[in-house]
Image 1 (cartoon, rainbow over the protein chains, first blue to last red):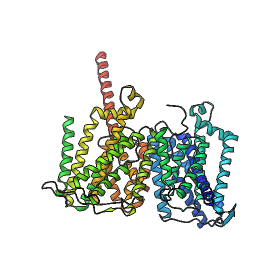
Image 2: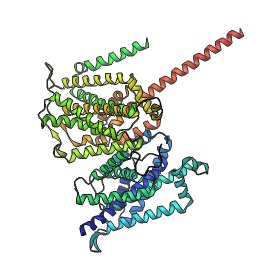
Image 3: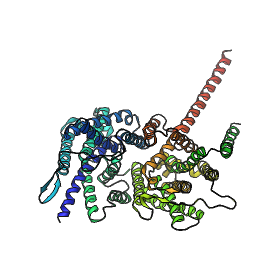
Image 4: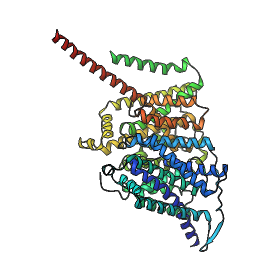
Length: 287
Length: 333
């Protein structure tokens, strides 16, 4: 039973990271109407920036996280301005291909800048503590707490401020948003910034548990795709719940089924879901 | 008149391709060209489903790998004669892709892209983790192609002709496909599935056919690759390979007949020239992809065709104006 609860806790940690990444992805989906393949690269760059400022400048972990969030948010906006805003949102193929191009560039860039070896991020929260009879590292708890904090913050922003409402409006109906005078360019830039920031935060939170390497974003982004398909494309609660479901499934699956094929679970799940419901779970209406 | 000029040009190109090993018996060049030929076949495969039919498939590295591993496993562990294994490997991929397509093609646009990406990843993971495929260590000792009558395949020149033969076969097949009703059906589906359906086209059946053809071509390329390199590893099923095939297609011109050949030739050659970049070559190719999508979404061949069409139109307008102007002159006189 203790093992079970340990795995639940692990699932919560992993799920928090997935949820944050999927949240950004689902927000951007509301603008592009196509999942952004380059989102995983933003995740990876975020971890590297935090690691670099922490080791080179010797700043504290939280300041490193903040710097990473700001820089990646900026990078995300630049991406939107230079590439995505120039592409027709009605044609999905060019957007997908362009985002793949960006993904490749950033991955190669990271390899060039920081090398392809695996790097460890050291935090002041490596100690283990006892919690209800379970042994956990502080970092794992921090991931959960910080993720929930960010989600609440995002929720408040989207529901309580005008700017947040504009983002929601854009994702619900582009034309409707134009009609009431929402500035599409501003909303689009802001959405990309938030998505990039969330990805960087998720990466920096997860980095001390996992490792930092150039292709670290690939698996995460593929799983984030799975999550937003499970949770419904563009749905914010869907991304959060989907993230935790997948985190749990992986964590429990690794213990009780097979640790070797842990990464398979997400894709088997996806293949099963799309096999039965080609437009994803919770698909709204028909074409 | 114009048609014959084009025919002469193609014949000249073919002659150069055939005479190349005699004119330039340089091993290095031949090796590069062999790789160009193999990849071009795979790119034609992707072009059938993505270019013609408009469905972005990211599973093609997987099909390429199934073709290669099919041949490798059948010859090294199954003891099947080479050419039989060759045919079986492709048949196996077609068989598998039929069932994948049956399910995958029910999804549309980005769902299809993500679905095929997941399928590609599953294939990679299965090859990587399975004991049968040799896992990370890969598969070694794949035999050379067995001799057909007096033809043996041991020298690099003989490999060159073998690959050239299969490439020409593929191009001929694609040429016939492009000008057939089936090819036009695929394009109709790309332009609008709803419209195609209204015209009485069975969208699912045609999409499935395009998918199976494209997987079969990828498998053919994979089997050829395995028989040429004779060592295969799980990396060939990696998503990066799928992206690379897409890059070749994009540079040449998506949905065009000559695009895959030209794109693959240029990118492979560029890769060889930028060899000092090695693993960082995406630093150059990533932005190229983005720039192409932004400014030349139809690639080199597509861009050329558009330029020609524009010029022809301009000429027409000019001629019409000229004729009109002439008439006015006549009236004035």
